[in-house]
Image (cartoon, rainbow, N blue to C red; front, side):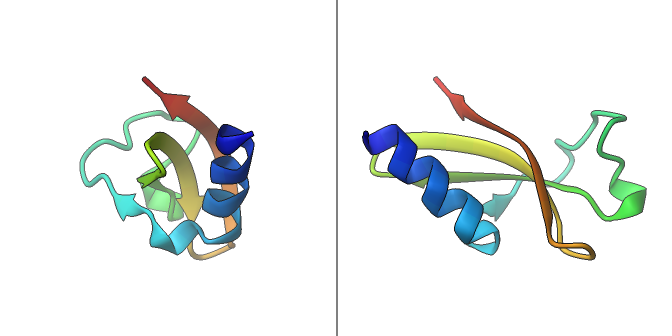
Length: 65
């Protein structure tokens, strides 16, 4: 349950995550198009995701061990 709430919180407030500068190397989410790799720790749950502030899109949300 904690993981589900953490995932929902991260997706509802993507700007709260810290941008992982230099870590956005996946060609599916090109930095040139505005994509940023971000990370956020919510109650011990580390969540990484791609966020595009130009469009507001969030993608590739996943938990990291």
